[in-house]
Structures are given as C-alpha cells and as structure tokens.
Amino acid sequence: MSFAYNASAVALGGRIVLPGPAIIQSQASVALAPTGGVGTQTISNFNYNGIVTFDEASAYVSGSQDDTDNTFNTLSTVTIRNLNVLNVLQVDRLVGSITSRHDRGAPEGEITFQGTSVDNLRIAGRLIGPRFNQSFYTRYPTHQAMVAGMNENVANSQCPEVRSWVEEDVAKERAKAGPNFDEAACRARLGLLNVAGLVADRFCLPPGGGARDDQGLVHCSLADDIPGIEEMTPEDEARIPPAELRQRHPIRRYGYVIKVAGFGTIKLAEIVIKPGERRLNMFRLEFGCPTTGDMTVASVGTNGTELIP
Image 1 (spheres, helix red, strand yellow):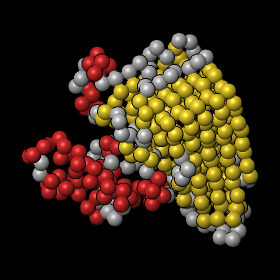
Image 2 (cartoon, helix red, strand yellow):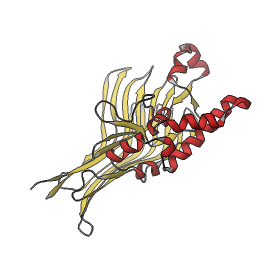
Image 3 (tube, rainbow, N blue to C red):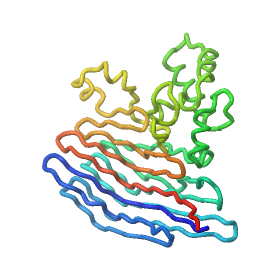
Image 4 (cartoon, one colour):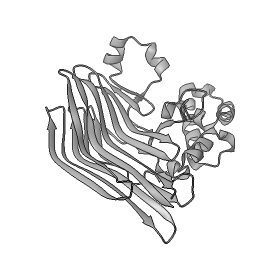
C-alpha cells in the first residue's frame, strides 16, 4: 500500500476591486507532489502599489515516510517578515504551520498547528497579543475527534481548555451583573451546553447549533481570545447606527473576526477542518472602502490518503 501526500502553502494572494480591478498573484506558493519530497519558494521585497508589502516570504512543504513507526508525515509552513497591509495591519514576523502524522491504516491523520505564531502584531496602531490555543487542537487532532469533543457536554468534559473557558465566561458574566450575580445559576447554565455552544462566540459558530455546517466542515480559529479589542456580538452591532459604529467603535470584534473602520474585516488564524484535512489561514482579509477586495495571507493546508495498490 502506498500513500498520496497532499500539502500546500501560499504566503499571499488576492484581488483588488477598487480603486481599480487587479489580481495579486499568489506569492511564495508551493504544492507537494503526491509522492512526497520537498517544495520551497522564497520571495523578497514585495510591494503591490503600496497596498501590501513584505520584506521576505518563504513557503515550505515536505512529505516523508518513517519506516520505524509506520507513519507518513507531512509539513506545510509559511514565514513572512515585516508584513504591512495599508498601514493598518502590520506584523514583524508571522509563521503559519501545520503538520500531519498519518499512521498506516488509520482513517485520518493527526493534524496540529505547533509553531504557528505572530510577533508584534499591530492593528490600527494597537499592539495586539492574540492567544493561540495550540493544546486544544492537539487534544482533538482529527475531524472525528474534534466533532466528538465539540458535541460533548460541558459539565462532563475533562478538557482543561473547556474548564478554562467556563471560568472566563463566569468572570465576564460576573463583571456584567455586578452584585446581583448568581454564580451557581451561571455555572449550571453553562454546564448544560455542549462545547460548541460554549465556544460559539469565540469561534463564530451558530448559537445553539453543532460544530459542523451542512457539508460537515468545522470553522473555528487558533485564536480563542484577542485581548485589547472591544467585543461586540452581531446582534449588538445591528442595533447601533453605522455612523455611531464608525465613530465610537472603530475597532471591534466578534470572536476572531475583527472589524476596522475604513479598512474592512480581518479574520485571524482561521481554521477549516474537514475529514482528514485542515487548512489554516493566518489572515483572511475583506477590504472596505476606499480599497475593496479580498486577500489571504499565510495559508497552509495538509492531509494525505493511503492508496491501493
């Protein structure tokens, strides 16, 4: 039985609609051959009309078999130095990394994101320190395990991250309610949820729903908290006039989705999980006026399939 490797990495690519239509071709983009091996590309001193610049971007993919423990291993990683997007999104150094360990005969590989990081991330001049929850995804390294973990009852969960999220939610509710806070009732309500319900606001999941959409995909983020940016639910945002949002809440977020007045939307460390496959987009941007368009920065993905014969 042989193995078909699958890994890809792209540093940056997208399209601009305004002020003039244009395509930003994929930069530092590589794909792994199905037989494995290595693929790499480096781009230096990139500048697209002052809209996006970086000093250097490197993409690397590899796939190999370890005969000592009968596993197939795949890596996909992107590193970018001194990224600047419209002088609003700036990062000294960012790394998007995803690895897969596929045991022979296993239905899915174990996929994790160790090594992913951002150094000195600034959004609209603010120094932002997102919390990347690596251990949660290491605990649930397959699609099957993630769905099972998300559907688990909060009160019965033994996951340390779930217990930590409960404590954070209790603290937030205490701050809102003040002296009238009923902690026992709050904990009881949270305990009745499944994990997907507990993290719905963190990962922008449908309230009261499960972790998967109709196609079985799980959408979430490696960033389970982004301190320093005002939190606002879509329901609260809908009640505020647009002019007031721009003037009084110019930088706000719901989960890992950040909105910046005059810039657009930043989706930070977005993860898409399919059976046997995961993709990490470090930044997925949807520009608002005066520049409009879409861009993905540091996107990596991997999986693999055993073949017969």
